[in-house]
Length: 146
Image 1 (cartoon, helix red, strand yellow):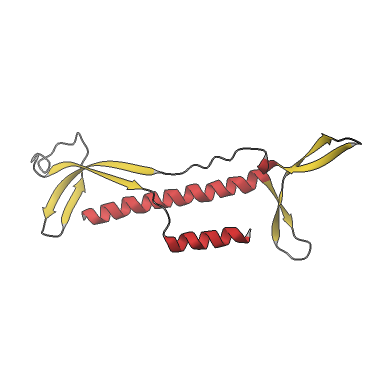
Image 2: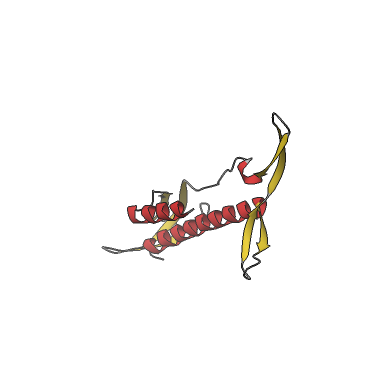
């Protein structure tokens, strides 16, 4: 395997994990704090916030308000800030612009890995970064619609 393919594969796996965490977080938010309701005017499903009735004292009578449950709890969002991957590798072929590698178990001993010059470790660190300016502007516009 080319080292570039290894890095791309690990990076894609991390991005897929991040995407799954995001989707799961949004799904949990809606499942826990909203009810799905059929829209009377169409066949669409709309989300209605789950609420609790709160009786507040007032000067003349008590006032009852409906408070959305989502506003009463703190929302923690799990996120990936960075991922560090340590791999043991064996260099099988080295060209000017290309390195071919195989994975190597740390305790693996065979004739191919006996030569310590071709075996070693690699550490890859992936960090989250801010969105590009164009994506940030689109997100800001979409948030302003709410």
